[in-house]
Image 1: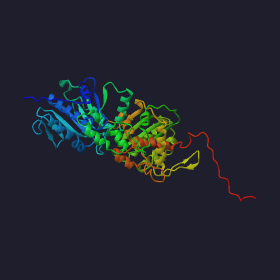
Image 2 (image 1 turned 120 degrees about the horizontal axis):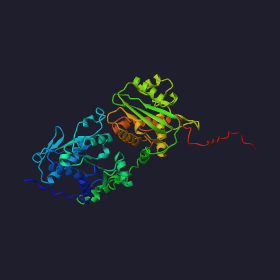
Image 3 (image 1 turned 180 degrees about the horizontal axis):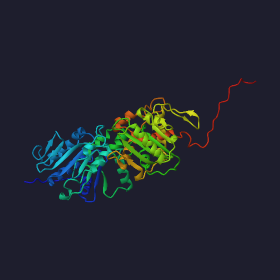
Image 4 (image 1 turned 90 degrees about the horizontal axis):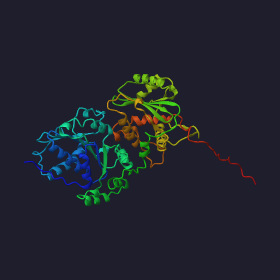
Length: 469
């Protein structure tokens, strides 16, 4: 006897159900606050399709599998119990290979989407095929994983089932790639195949009272704004150097062009990337990204790029820490960037500035330029070249934005020189080396302190003289 599933969604969940059935919708973004029924919607929608379409194959993904099992899978068990489905009989968890299977051949994979140094390009996802999918707390997941997963859906019996290849994204407010979705929804510029449905705790009558009490107890105002009010503009971290809107605007800004420059971040390890940025003034007009190449190859490519783009060697800069020094040594005339050297003197005021080192100084100057819309990235498709599999222009943009978001001052409560978090601290947060933002930051070494001030006035203290009577 077939089981009958009675679905009783909230009003916001019903909007999502309609979007899931709309053949023209490919992305459903749902949530934006705690307690809005995100996980319940995700579990119930996967369950309905798994039972309705024998042989259906989907996934539930999160940044960490352990957190997925502690959140979405717990909700999955509650959903199945509510609908009278028994574990081991109507569905079964394969704990060894992390998937849920059904007697009718349907299957739901449980995916760990964390960035792993051993698999920087998510090759583990490359051969998978799905009908559709769901990403829980999508804002925590690197955009590269999102981009690759998008290419893996629509590959399993979609025509047979007459099911469109859609992806459900559920999340709380986050400053990562999902912030762009929120902004587009707010401005009315979302793509036609994408919907954003905000559901807060008060939109869920089943749990509104208890969630309301819990959320009201949150002391931190930023966290309360994020989880209770669903605010994407919650970030009041005083250590953050670059505004989120300014990062988004970086790719559409218009600035005056000037002389040409080349900045190079040289790979230190086999998995790190060598990055070239081509500049006109403070406008990036070209990007070259390479992987797993030695410094001799990097040096030769730098000479070729400089010649083709007519960039003087004195305008070429490579990081000189570690093996990067070989590129500077090989190409006589190239400048070197050593992060821990003393901060530069301001060429106008002729004064040393209060920065811990060159790296911190250049990060602060870059942040100021981005916040003031004095820098732009205007790269045409033919001027973006990547030899890294899966690293498209859009993926690169999202990864750069994530790195810029992670730039924060350090020890700002102490009375000492200004400094930013170390490269290792940023790497620990985002799961990779911030190669893309570092290549941007190094450009600040050129022409430092020679623009932005029209006149300088110095007032000298008079020499002390003996008082005259």
